[in-house]
Structures are given as C-alpha cells and as structure tokens.
Image (tube, rainbow, N blue to C red):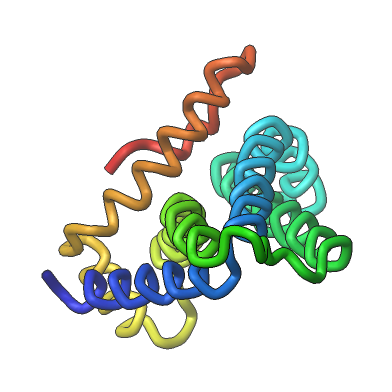
Length: 180
C-alpha cells in the first residue's frame, strides 16, 4: 500500500461520509447523473473528439477522443448534478430516519467508485502527457499510480461500465479505455 492507496482510501471514506450526510435520494440522483454522463460521453466522444481534432490540428485522434470523453463526462455530470440540486433543494425522508442515511452510504459506495474512476482517468491522461515544467512531479505521480493496488479497482469499474454501454454502439466503446 503506497501513498496513492492511502489518498484513495481517504477520498473514498470522505465520499461515504458525504453519502451519509446527503442521504439516499441525493446520492441516487448523483449516481444517476454520473451514469448518464458516462453513457452520453460514450456515445458522443467520437464526434466531439473529431471536432476537437478539427479545431486543434495536429492533435492525435486518440488524445482528442480521450479529452472529449472526460470533458463530456465532467460537463454532463456537473450539469445534471447542478439541475437536480436546484430542482430538489431538500431531499430528506423524515419517515425513515436512519435508513435514509444508511441508504445514502450504500448508494454513495457506487457513486464514489465511479467518480474516482473518472478522476483517475483524467489524472492518467495528464500524467502520460509531457509537462513543460514540474516533470519531477509528473514522474512522482506516475510512479505512485503504477505501484498502487487500489487504483486499478476503481479504474476497471469505470472501464467495465463504459464497455457495457459501448457494446451497444456500432463502433464499440472508446478505444483508449483498456483494463489495467
């Protein structure tokens, strides 16, 4: 267990605590938002990647599609989360009390796993690029991510969901997502 694993465990625990505080309905809506974001990004990453390659000539197709995928996931998930927080400012089930909070923790488990998978995807994208400054930091992050034992678990959960959705597409899922 290295420092990346410790950070992942702390973030995971914070996410579960957030699920306890936010309760069942808010966590279920957040889970729905991230799943919708991943599904829509899987469908839209090819045309948006082509558009990014068009506006930035010289960009590799794989880099453009990967950037399109994570930009779409972040934008769609953030938009849906923002809308649901405006529409439903109060989401407490007063009749069930503690079961509402325990249900929030249960749903937060899946929500946090997917959110961490997306964050790991974004971090892996940036760590694999060359940096004009702070290359030592990039190498430190890269070595920590390579030695991590928990990182593949969160990442492969995201890859599994994307490949299930990609199985329904004629061109398949994104080519840049491979299990670790």
